[in-house]
Image 1 (cartoon, rainbow, N blue to C red):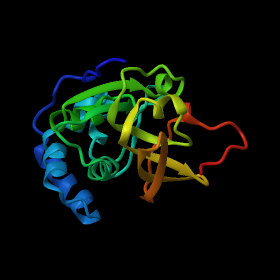
Image 2 (spheres, rainbow, N blue to C red):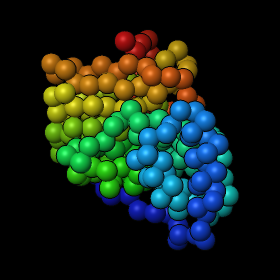
Image 3 (cartoon, one colour):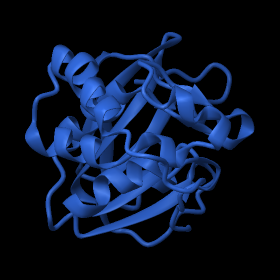
Image 4 (tube, one colour):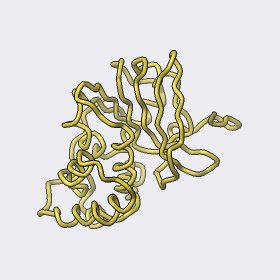
Length: 204
């Protein structure tokens, strides 16, 4: 597990673009919590993209980075932060989408943030539990047992899920050792294929 770093030098002030993102994409879709808006205003999305992709930082859909991952649409992160309801005492595991953006959004809101790549998380290589919150930067077909085992009892998880080829935001808890995700709403979310289920497997 590694701490993610920015992929480019900070650019000129894009605060007006972030304010427009908040007003036109987040508030109009029901994201009004002040801690969410404050973090998304404070963190420049373009600083987590390669220079040639920076002009796409504030569009209302994901920016794909080929095999290097993605930065999802602003609305996904706004809704994820709302569902996560981060607390100062939280110990958080972020399953990365490849840029470090989600970890940076969460960092000042919680006690500790640890990051792991999607490939390592899916392969059971994540360590260091117990985590009170797991945040997955993308949509998954399944939550592996090894990842669920790192969660504290009554720990929360927020992720995208793939259900019948549709991506949805989902949230859940670990209760009696078992993790259950409930779909919250349909959203366009990049799929983390490292979590693809074996053929014939269905999400409960």
